[in-house]
Amino acid sequence: MRELSVFIDESGDFGEAKECPSYYLVTFVFHDQEEDINHQIAKLEESVKSAGFNVEYIHTGPVIRREEIFKGYSINERRKLLYKMLNFVNSCPIYSITIIIDRKEAENRDSLTGKLTKEINITMDKYQKFFLEFDKIIVYYDNGQNELSVILKTAFLTRFSNVEFRKAEPQKYRLLQAADFICSMELLKIKRNEKRLSRSETKFFYKPQELKKTFLKCIEKKQLQVYERNI
Image (cartoon, rainbow, N blue to C red; front, side, top):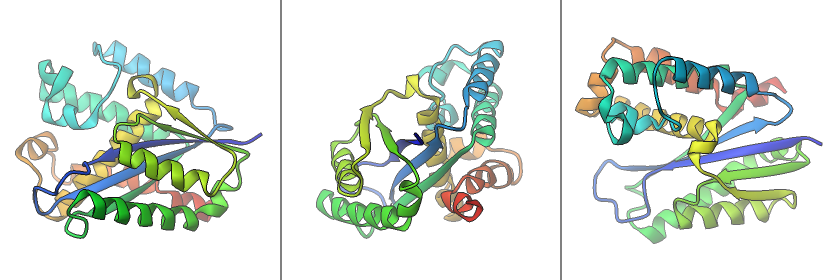
């Protein structure tokens, strides 16, 4: 029986758009359970431990901004940690989709709900053939935003009868951390293109073209359409 795991992370919230430009992103990471990633997970965890990090969750945004438990680490230590996540994502047989909503087109809760619902439905219809290859689909989301949770359940359950939803903590699932990483990179891509990276982001990615040629290039290779062309 072929089983597809779907790990979901988001950036943004359903409140009133307070800044312009502003975006809401939802990233889906797909993993065919026939593809074993235990080796990659073990390698990541051993690498993190041997480097002296005492962290369960490589939370990309706080790593870059030196927030939460990452306050005590230097920029070089934090860069090493993010490179470990980059290498993990790069080595895993996973694929992703990121839906991006411009808050200029969805300024309040109702308009964002409607726009996001429409875009998720369009995306799932586009890749329906991919989803139908699997006998079971398990969706992992931390239920951090109730509105998104409702949209996701409606989108999946109205299309497929073989779907199971599981509330998941990022600390327990490295692929939820991978979804967070990809979602964060997609937002950084937008900000880079708009020439408005923050001071902490510019300081973190201080090497010329490092963000584009190393990090963004990696996530581009993981887009699901690449997988589609190969099947």
